[in-house]
Image (cartoon, rainbow, N blue to C red; front, side, top):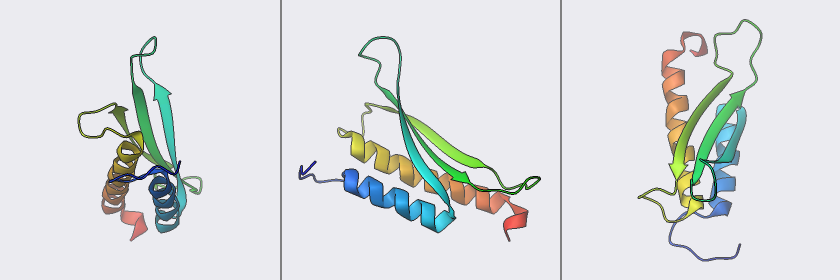
Length: 103
């Protein structure tokens, strides 16, 4: 905390989570899971939006993405998570376009 960066930091991640939750009327979250055995497998970064849906609705209960970190594009985990949230927003937009009942 308190580190100056040239890219997104954890405050930006928090702001993006709040914005996605408000914009899409759901609950956005990030999950970090260890990959492999031992300490060299990296992380699986999961970004998900959970929606409150009524029984029988064709609206998806959740839209999710996942990625692996470390990666060649980001040297900072916060920047990687931030990009994952942008990818989640894109996946949600695809779900909107495919959903006839949301019109």
